[in-house]
Image (cartoon, rainbow, N blue to C red; front, side, top):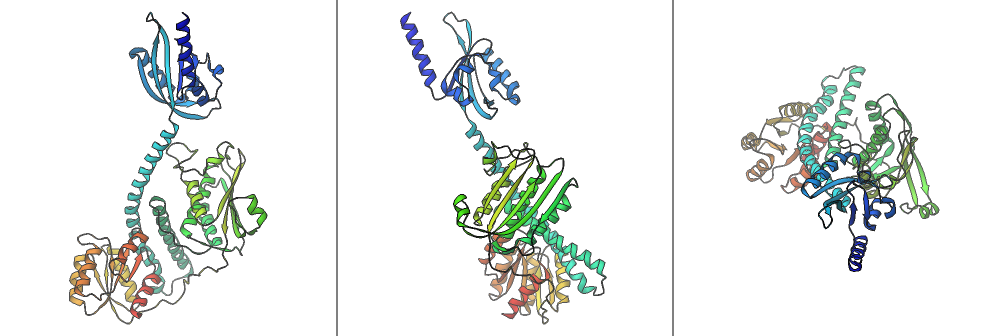
Length: 505
C-alpha cells in the first residue's frame, strides 16, 4: 500500500509541474485535481478550482459544442475539441482540449481527465492569415474596380471642364453645378486611390500639404454622410502650418479617425475636429518618448461616444485588433493610422473614458514651406494644328477627348484598340506628332501596340494612360521608352500641359 501511495504521490507531483494544463474531473463534471499550469492559465488558485464545474471555464458561445463533446467522450472514451475559454477576470482565450474517460482498477467510471493547451496565439495567427488572404483578394478586385471607375470618371470630368468653354454664356447657377460635378469627380478619383492604397499599398508621393484644406474636406464628407444625430464641430485656424506628407495617406488617417468616432456614437453625439500650431520643447520630448523637439501641428478628433475600456486601450493600435462584431471591422483602421503617422515622423496620443468619449490627437512635424497652389483658372496651352492619335477602347473617353483637343487647336485621329492604332499610324506616321495610348484594351493591349509603333518609327512620342494603379503602371511604362504617363481621370490641364511640354521639347 505504501508503494501505491508513493506512486500516486509521484504522479500528482508530475501532474502539478506539467507545462500543459492537466485536470481530473468527477462523474458530475467537477474538478477534483488541477495542476498549477491550468489554474494559472485560467487565473485561479488551484484550491479555488476544486469543486468547480467545467462549464464555468467555457465561453457561452461554445457551451453547446462542449456539451456535445462531453457526451461523445462518454460514448467513445476520448474526444478532442477546441473551444473558447473564460478566465476568472472574464477575459477570453482559446484552448485545445483532450478529454479521456477515467476508470478505477475495477473498471468503474470515475469521471475524466482533461488535457488543455492555450492556443490563443495560434488562433490569432490563423485569423490574421485569413484576413490577409481576404485583403489580397480585395486588392485584386480593387484593381479591376479602379480601372472601371476611372474610365467612368474620365469623360464626366472632361465634360464638366469642357462645357464652360463650349457654352461661354452659361449662367452662374449652372456654373456652380458644373464646379460641384468637377469637385466630386476628383474626389471620386481620390477615393479610388485610397481603396488601392488600402488594398495593395502604394508608393508615397510626398508634397507640402496645407492641412486646413484637407481637414475641411474631411469635415464636408462627414457632414454629407453622417446622420443628423451627430453634431459636427470644427476649430481649424486659417494660419495652420504645412506638413511634408502624402496627402492621400493623411486623408486616410483622418477619415479612419472620423469614421471610428461615428461608429462610437450609434445613438448620436458630438464630433469635433480641431487643429493648432505648437512647439514641442525639450521638457515635453523627455516626458513623451515618441516626441521630438520642434514645430508641430496637433490635430484632434474627439467624440462623445462609448469610450475605450482601460484594459484594452494599450492594444487598439495592434494589427487586426478590433472591438467590433465579426464582419463589421478589419482591425486595420487604427493600425494603419499609427503606421502612417509614424512614417511621417509623428505620433498619436489617446485619451478615453468609458461612456464619455475618446480623443485621438495626431502630432505631425511642421514644415516652413508654402504649399504649391494649383491654378485652376490659368490659361490652358493650345496647339498649332498638330495631329494627335488618341487610342482608347472607351468610346465616351475618346469622343470627349477629341472634342477637347479640337477646342484647343489640335487635329485628332481616334482608334478604339491597338490594331486600329497601328493601322492609322502606318497611314499617317509622318504627320502624327504624339500618340496618346490607353494601356488596357481588348484585341491588342497598349504594351504590344507601343512596341509595334516603335518598330515602325523609333522616334515616336507616346503618352501612356491607364485607370489602373497609377504608380505601378507608371513604373512599367518607363521600361517601354514612353515619354509621359497620365493616370485616369485626368484634367484638361493635365492633358494639354503634357502635350505642350512634349511638343515644346
